[in-house]
Length: 221
Image (tube, rainbow, N blue to C red):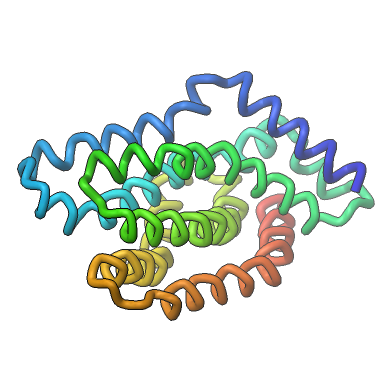
């Protein structure tokens, strides 16, 4: 656990020292959400209908921006190889890095979600459903994305490949998340969609750390 907290503190401090990279995903998400109404029109009914999808697509794309650097810098400076050689549990170290990524890239989006919901004219029920889906779904994005990042860490242009690998995998999450918000807009229970997303998250928590650890070892060869 001491190595876990050391990796967590190191990545946390590095994230805040690189202010431009820290703000890039958040600013990108805000720009996407801001520009969509300019393109489709300011009608409150239209914005309310497409708003949840806009926010979720912006969250997916902003997560991809931050994911590419999850293991890349550690691979380039050799610290990733040192982590592999340490006697500490590599899956636990992977969890530490994924946790920092979620706190840096997704937690600000959760904090800004009331403003985004107000901007897109979402009702209270829709906002509540959106917040729950983001709270459950964004950790799932970070966990799944970490596997692809670990596999492509040694590639020179892994960012393009990363998007091709992850966007199709994120489609089920996007469908269930937007379906939950749509159900909330119609006053229909959306517990089923949340349960499916939660089940995917629990499954990812159980298996992803080991898959990331294996992918890191493969990328070192």
